[in-house]
Image 1 (spheres, rainbow, N blue to C red):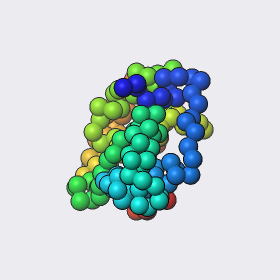
Image 2 (cartoon, helix red, strand yellow):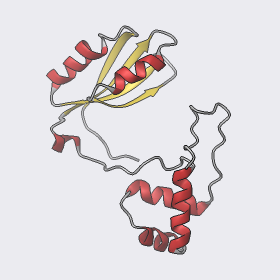
Image 3 (tube, rainbow, N blue to C red):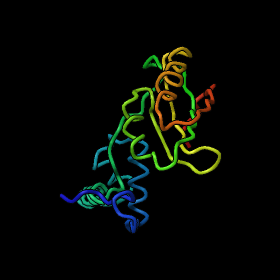
Image 4 (cartoon, helix red, strand yellow):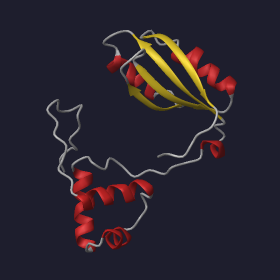
Length: 159
């Protein structure tokens, strides 16, 4: 099986052509990754074989990168969430990525343009846990020049 095409692997990446049915399948699986092929086929009015082939193709081409559960952080004991922005030493992202992935409280990271270089979603049990992540883990990384923390008061539903 060929590796999925990714923008990182190929700087000349071209997105696969998707029709309306492909988009409906991706949207349905995004809402519920456990939906059966039969239910997907019925929803978009195609045969099960066609739905299966399309989901396989979407997975093989890297459009679908995985099937995950959406969890409630509060029920996992993660009552404090924050966005933490990082100003980085230039050209340090590749070495920094592995260090950030090793911090279990970092749930999402992205490179961005603007006043800072990266933004992280950090979840911790409480404010003390968040403080430890920022001061003892993130600010201890030599490539991190500065951090800013924005506490999340309420998580709103995904759009």
